[in-house]
Image: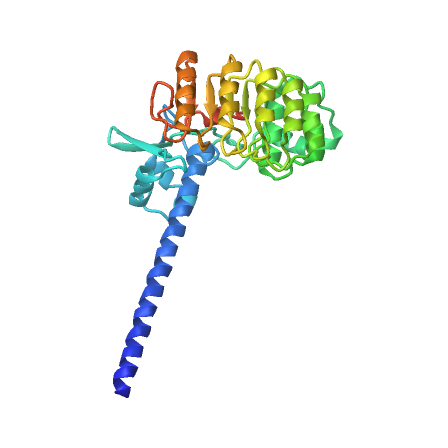
Length: 340
């Protein structure tokens, strides 16, 4: 009996060990898949040119060239093709797509393509003159007064550069928020109320503004000031600004007369009545992202009717009418906060 019990115990331990090994292998596979997805997002949305890849018509890259990158050394061709075919966003939209031409496979990201320029001369690691100058200015920003600088493109490049280097703080923004700016993306940047005051005081000509993930700061009263002081806004992202309420929506309805694109996703504190009022009163609005809002069946009918009359596109979970719903619910995301 004792030996039988020991055998049962050993068998149980072996079974447990096998289960643990299987779990570890599954975790490693998921981790590898996650890394591959992030690499593909980086390269196919932003980094293709920076990594030395050639872009073909429609922003496709050749798969074999992609696989030659050092970043992709741990992944096989089959793994990449499989990930391209199955990867979905949190909105259940395809992240990537591929095509075959003349015996070659090409892949691209389905949305959010906004490629960075290669900072170096082609085929070398020597920085371009413009890149070196901009880096010098960014490093010595306090020595420069950019208030009357006429080139938005270069100011925007400096903002992007400092953002990527995690140096876009309040002091830097005081120097870089200048009247020439019409496009500003502050998503993922820690900003303060005084920084936002600088935005509407120093950049009165802003047309495109992204405040995605600035929910820790954005309140109804700040929103009211923002839309009053920035009358030229055409595209605004307030994604995940979770403290905004119907009062903010009312301010948009009243003051944002030129607004064409608005992102209110991941905000549960704005009612469907306020959204309907917003759609009715913002006469220029052509695109509204309310993907995760809880809208009643009656509310959906009203929203759909207004959208058809106004020829608007609405992003709302479960909305499938292609007359008013984009086929790809992420297709217009690059419009929000898009800079040069």
